[in-house]
Image (spheres, rainbow, N blue to C red):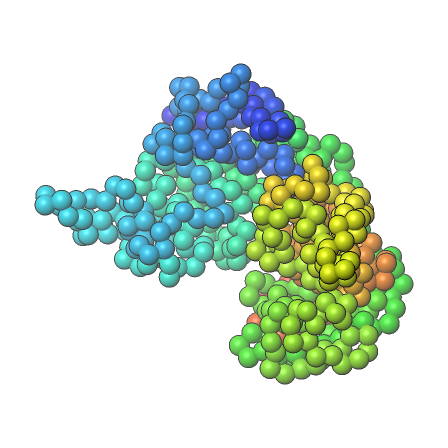
Length: 505
């Protein structure tokens, strides 16, 4: 196949759901051996387009066509797409945890002996060949359920290659990976390019987009917004196409005057998780907690909020030592917590936006033992406007919202309680650039209202951009404290990667 041949093309694709035009004459092209980054704000149409290409959704009757290897196709389901050579690897993997690596790779096409039994020797040999091809140090007979998420992801890629795949679509593949695991994934994607496999890479992480892709396709409001050659553009070019305006400032520094100490932890420890953690956050201050995945940041935050127990140490709120046995105690003391996994921990996905927004305040909006629905609606209306939440209505199921709007619902839930302390764990994970900017502005506004804000983030530009001070963590211990001109990339990297004896003590 020549380098100019398109292995996959989509022309004027449209898709309408009840009351929503999800895609409006969207076009896409992918060459063999090329990495095409597909980007856009949450709700821009990326997921819908991916599901159409994968055969999960069907296009509108008057829509254009999809061409694979130059021939028009009409994939009726994902298996149909796979049989042609197109595979999508989602964040939620589709492996069978109770089967071996080899069984998962060749699921549905296991080699058989003349007697019709599974030929285990042949199965493991073929699986090992593919694993060697990808450079994966995984045994064919290992149980998939015993592997890390990143290695499971590699097994999914190996399965795709076993089916003669020509196009692989990756949907936010690094959301649960460490830096080392991400490096392995990138190496494999480059090896796929060398084998002439076309790759569509969907990510909100712009550093990954610029590192991996050859071209960038931007969607906005269900339409093509523009296409760029990666080496010839910069972040501002991409952002402008995504949100329809220049984004001169990604971060909005808090301008509040710092007040009295609102939260302090002294010697907080939990065996095997973190040790001797001490810091304080003042009224009107944004304190960043930064470190690599596994450093113990989330565990510390969850302990402060009462979701975990601790073995030693003390917590002070507004200068008074407190005992927090559970999250109910934390809320009663004026604390709010936006968790890292909003879908699993921050929302009830089958409930409405209205119910999710008011759930933390229900005990305060009762009248004669029943929920005061007028008060509940007032809470939703207030924070829908304050946070610019985009939703068809209060009774829209929250699972139907984009990631950015879901995050605003979670934040609004806690803002409605007028907290004294608000903990934000990875507040912009999995949301688009435009929504990130809005969340960053909101963090500054919360501090300016006098709230003590503790922010945890794995993104260095973010933690540097929103924080007044930064505490670094490594291997369950604090490793540094920085503010003002001390907040530099070099200092943060040194603190999370190399800890001297004095910093670790």
